[in-house]
Structure formats: C-alpha cells, structure tokens
Length: 451
Image (cartoon, rainbow, N blue to C red; front, side, top):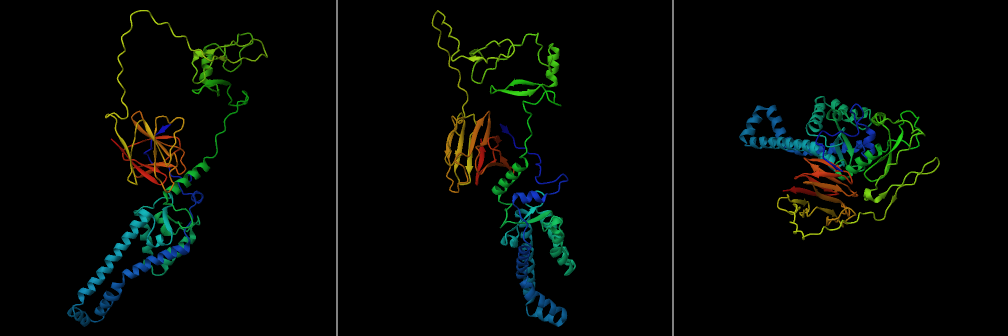
C-alpha cells in the first residue's frame, strides 16, 4: 500500500467537539503542569538579570539626573566636569542591553517554548491546543504585554495577574490570565514528558491514538440468521488469494437474480436441478489443473470438493516439420535503474555518509536482513552507536518512476519531514518521497536527493 502525504491542514488531536483542549489527553501523553514554585524561581532569575542590566543606569545615570533636577547649578557643574557623556553612555547602555534581552526572551519563548529562567528550571511552554511551540506573536508578545501591563497598577496589578489568576483556572492546570490571552500552558519538562523531544512525543501520540482507536467494528457472524433485521443471505465470494469469504446479498444482487428468473432471497426449489458448484482455483494453480467433480445427488450426501491434479499441465505440441526457423531477433532491453535516463537517488545522512539507491531498492538498518519478498534489494548497514536504528529499519524502493519508503516495523519508527512538517510513517505502508524530503530513522536523519 502506497500513500501520499496530505498537504492539507491536519486535524488537531486532543480537542473536544467545540475545539477546546482536553486536559485528560495531555495527561495521557505524560505532560504535567509546571510547579508553581519553579515558575516563581524562573521569574525571579529573569528579574535578577534585568536588574544587573540596569546597574549602569541605576548607579551613574539616575543619581546624576536626580542631582540635576534638584539644583540647576549641579547640572552646569556636571557639564563642566565632562561627566555628561558618561551619564548618557551609561543610560544608553542599560536601555540597549535591556531591549536586547527582552527581544531574545520573546524569540526564545515563541520558537523554543523556553526563556532563560524557564530553561534553567526545567519548564517549557506549549500552545494549549496543539501542544507544540506557542508561536511568537500570540504565545510570546501578547502574553508579555498582559504581564507588563499589570505593572501599570502598582503592586495590586502584578499580584492579581501573576500570583492570583492561576488559582482561578477551572481546568486546574495553573494557567493565569496572561496564559489565557496567549493560549499557552507551562509544563514540567524535568519530571514529565518534554514536549520538544520529537521522538518521545511522537511515540506518546501514537500510543494515545492506539488506545483511543482500540475499539473495533464488530463483524457479522456467519451464523447470523437470515431472518434477523438487516441480515442478508450468505453467498460465497472469491478473493484474490483464492480463499472464500462470506458476503451478504445486496439489492443489486437481488435485482440481477430476479432478472435471470431465480429467487435471490430463498433457496432453490427441490424440483429444480441444483446448479453446479463454482470451481475456484487457488492462488498459483491454473484452472486447467482442476478436475471438477459432480455434486452428489440426494439429500444428506455431502458434496465432494474438486480434486487437484499433481501435474495437469498440457502436453507440448509436436514441433512442425519444415526448414529450421531463423533465429529470433533479441528484443530491446528495458531501461534499468542504472540507465542514464533513470534519475539517481542519494541519501545524505547527518553523519556525512552518502548512500546511492542501487538497482530496484535498498534495505537500511544496523544489520539488515532480506526477507521473503526482498529479492534483489541491496543491504546497506549503518553505523549507529546509539542503536536508535533497528537491524532492518527501512526499505527504499524504485517503483514505477517513484521512490517509495517503507518502514519495516522498526522499534523507534520512521517519519518524513516535508516543508518543515513531520509525517509519521506507518509500519508496512509505503510513501512516495520527493527530492528535498528528510527521512527520520530513529534519531538519525537523511536528506533525499533525486536527479
């Protein structure tokens, strides 16, 4: 089975019918709310850094401004002494350093979900709906505007917004008013799951999705009564493997049987001759190799299945007598993967290794082993000290002009990163890769180059 990456907007997991995040889904993944004590510690660290950056202004510029405001003679004396340039330089340095620090904080929070203080205390910020990075404008800028706006009301504003509002969170996840405005949630990356650990987060989402989809649709039993509501009559239907499966008769079947003069819903009349049973050839056996056996007549006598001959191939026809035939002209060879017309495919690994796609395909792993259907595939072992790659991890095939990647039920899974979005590769299913895609094998990465 080969599937293509859906470039449309993906559905967000863990939301209810109204699009609101479900706390139990985050708990299933292993995400925990950040402890309040560590959040206070991280804020204290960042305030301490801001205080250090303000020292030139506080120690030099502010006293000079206060003295100049108190006495005009002091301002003139300051200019005559040549200290005016130092006063201005210290104030400008504090302003520039503080602005740079705030901008870096905003970028780190929006892109990485961690400011300086939160990185030191093991706290990460995520978007509360997608559980991914919060984003620069809403997750960082809007949130900080609410926080800094609280200082417009001295003492009461910061205490109410920073300290008290998280206590009013109805979901009990410690989200204050600033977090609600920025759609952010602070989680504990030290004792819980780190949401920016791509591999572990992918495994957690797969596990949660498997648990949610554990219910299977109940198949109708072959013993279901034909008189049951909605139950159709059972008919044998062949499939490509040569087996026989049960299928209910549909309305189309009933109309076809009615047009042919037979009753599609009731058994054949005892006076009518029984139709000959359909002879189904198992996979790999030609129809000529089956000798049909007539069904036994009379009630209570079981029907004997057809007998398969050991060798029922037709005898070769005698060669015609006449002059010897001219040697046949050899047919032109089909284009092979090694022909110049076939585009070359190269995998560029993060370690610097380059692997070219040879022949019809390759098997990649720490110690790959070919299976029953892997004839003609080249085995490519990879050096992986971390053992994040399985022994037989991924197959890369050349099929019908496309390059197909198939995960071989690896332990840590495979994925395709396209346009910055990671798409998990289900085991045993193929995906057509493009030039510029990145294959993720465990903790290793390989860039695909075609042409």
